[in-house]
Image 1 (cartoon, rainbow, N blue to C red):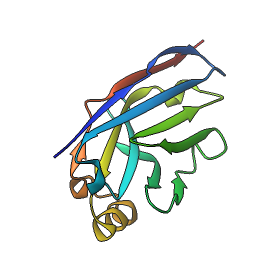
Image 2 (image 1 turned 120 degrees about the vertical axis):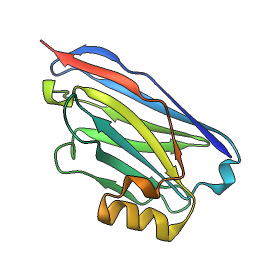
Image 3 (image 1 turned 180 degrees about the vertical axis):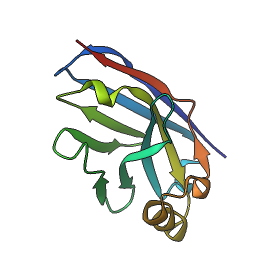
Image 4 (image 1 turned 30 degrees about the vertical axis):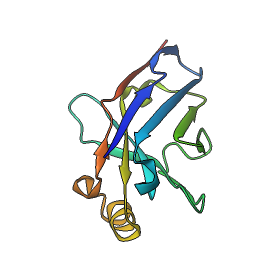
Length: 128
């Protein structure tokens, strides 16, 4: 089993920055890829950025490309968020998938059910 714990959320002014962490523990050798998601009130959960652990391949959704950076250091995946906007306000979750097929299917089809592990989420609030 793998446990994921997010941290680093908080309140920030428009244009500010935050760095989220997703710390993995347990059988982390099982993790193929990790994706950051967010869910704003009344909206569906959407993927934000994803990374393959072994290869370092990275993807971003269009709305955050150029502002957010996903990275990994050992068993922690980071999401550095710059130039934050009020529309970035959401609960941010990280999720991990064990297999190549599951991870690519999850990204291609935006299928949240493919992910094997989820964190509890961390709130990010951006306002002026």
